[in-house]
Amino acid sequence: EMCAALSEAGVDKPVVVRYIVETLRRWGYLDDRKLAANLIGYLLTHRPSGPHLIRRKLRAIGVVDEVIEEELSRELGPEREREIARDLARRKTAGIDDRRRAVRRINGLLSRRGFRSSVVNEICAQVLRGELNGEGNERDNPLGP
Image (cartoon, rainbow, N blue to C red; front, side, top):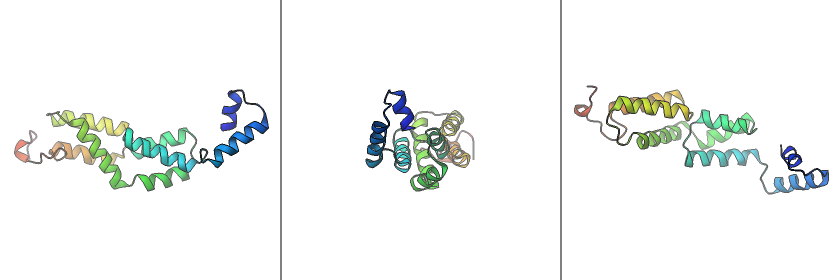
């Protein structure tokens, strides 16, 4: 891929291409594992995402499935996924009084962001019960007990 990109940029001498590729490899810039770990870290910090979306993005840039699965399991276990989804849902439902409307919003958002359906369903159920933002009082639940 780097050779093709260099060729498109007008670098056509094989000696120069080899030197650039070897230098980038030596500095760790052509390491799929490092690339996957960095992208996962970036997405979790700046655009909270679930494993399905992260997997799709990594495949799109050519990272092999084995590396993707290893890095995802290291960086984004089931409990971490729930925590990230819960935090995102809290932020996106703040100020929404209608729980059903909040559930529709959260369901769409978490699904688009690639969270597992079991996590999406769990978070939506928490929103409906008023547990996500610390309400948890059945008297305040407009949907009843």
